[in-house]
Image (cartoon, helix red, strand yellow):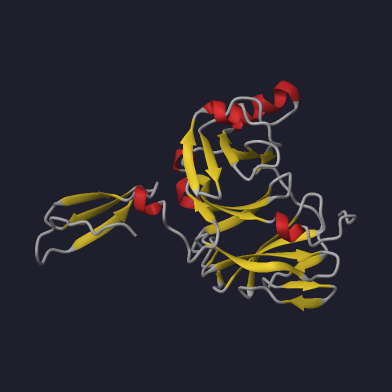
Length: 277
């Protein structure tokens, strides 16, 4: 990723590498005392945990900011999305004002056009002027599901095993208003050395019907990064047009380290219209 960078390290000298906690720099140090600092933030914007069939993004303006992030269509029914961050104080003030999330104070704003894969930092007015329904991706979207996600990282439906693209289930998340289940799986493994766990490998998104357990559409590769202490959450948009997989990277003090966006509207159309959870 990116171009090679020449470093003025001495021949025969031992060199150590140290990443900064925000993953913006790599510092190379020599036993003789020479230090070389390389800025890698631009290259890291391209980083993923394997191949991806969808847009995967790094909203660096949100790093080191605890709280939640919100997403809404730019206009109702649009595939262009606007995303913003709220710290805990902003989130409380926003909700306390009128018990509605999304029209109060907020942090940096991004605009995403999946068609052109444009992801850019924009002005606050882009969020403020948008009229799409707001989804709070920090809010729990848990509900009972028709499947069982076992402690062995498998998926079953009515007692029978369900084949998933990666083989190992990372998470399962039910749609807000439809009998559909978003499943993230990996062809890697789960490991837990001590108190910190993680998943390795290429990750895959799939949708399954909670009516009969069948898959809806084809698997989609997503470039979330598995590994030690790195885990992923799922966020359905309120209009059920997208599932956002957002990565928690414990050493960045932010759970918005990496976002992968999957459009699911066509697959949901395969469900019976009159089914409700």
